[in-house]
Length: 303
Image 1 (cartoon, rainbow, N blue to C red):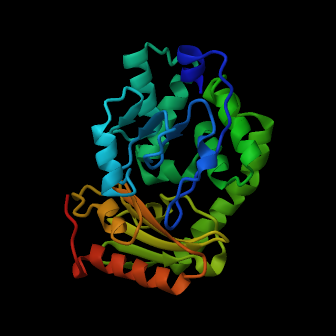
Image 2 (spheres, rainbow, N blue to C red):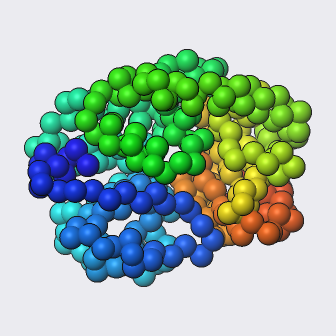
């Protein structure tokens, strides 16, 4: 928003739509009603009304035809680079290098987005204890279901320094119950986790958890290589798969490739799969298959 408003069109007005990965992903036409339409940090679409696109996911394309369509484009408004840890950093780099944009007030935002999205904390303790204001804001954003609040935060972050936004009373007020729930989540995951041959597996469906800090498994099991979890919400059942960024042993599996086999995707180091909310048993079965594979008892996807 800041880049477009300062470098492209100062008169532009923005309408925001939050996206979530769903089974049989579709892009409805009402998402493309602007004079210019932008997708950031999400799948590519061949919709002819798509103007700008930025993404860094290994699984950036719904179909091979979508990828072929993107590769045929000779377009300086669509950018894809999976080497980036965060889409924020990709946008900032492109905006600076190709359009002369000054990131200025957003330098801390870009720095912290790269740490949070790329799991570039020094250790699991720092990642889980989350004492920095930027980490607390990230926790609030991840847990909040109020789109109007999220859109307000996005607009504020396009205008003000990160720390000013992260320490606003409306953010701190929302953080307190999240902080308490976070400690409860640690105890739940500690109780239900099964750790075998370097892989942590846990099923959170009975606890109706909307999410959890993805570094908790490595905080509890520092020697682990991977974790696989199952959750259920009103909109989907979800498998999350991750690799321990602090394990010195080389990662042997591309988690995005594994999840793509079941209709999901993500990055080589962290990925996910979504199913309809009424399929918990199918979700559990596939999660157990993936955990078995990561333990070395199934098909390998090396890269």
